[in-house]
Image (tube, rainbow, N blue to C red; front, top):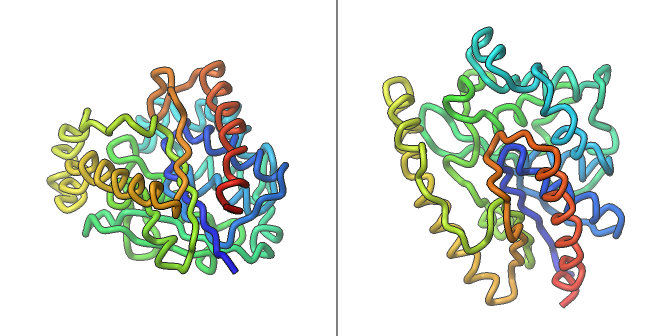
Length: 281
């Protein structure tokens, strides 16, 4: 029997593209044996495995516009522009405004890995479903901790940054878990290589306290592009399917634009239609 996996690389509010894909998959009744999520992609997968259609959409298109979610007020008050505890705690806990259906999530037999970057080593850490307790979604917070925009997030005795620094497209984990076919969700066009942008500057900010993470961040574009080329080679072999928006209309990681975000969601819904045929080839 073929074992299937899906990987969502996240990308801040651009993760709404993955939200569109997952909502359409719930309509189609498509399931996977394994999921790996980076940053917002990990949260997308939790809602998908819990069967909560529309939940991810609300986070990108409603809650992300609140000052409690991200604002300079948060930065001045707590040192983090994005309040991860508000997103994955206040909103997501059982008594929150939009709780995770934890029981449904845990009842789903699909495996899940959440990728975070150990701030001190700069290496990826992979948390699994067994690590997640009800109303304790720290691993989602760790995976989504954007460098410089947020302070490193503490879990136990370690502190973490966004998983995209160290393993931006973790499809290798899916194949290592025994998957025969893997779907990869990107949030930038497939044929557009990542450029360093502000990464070297952000790396300089991190270098004093977290030199290993600073090096990983400085090399993030190279790491991403190398992984993408490897993924494309596997796609040519029929082992992997890459879904990526044809355009992101200038959306950045933390962009707030209802119209552009909603169009990206619709692109995700349309592109999800390619998945059933790939899985059954």
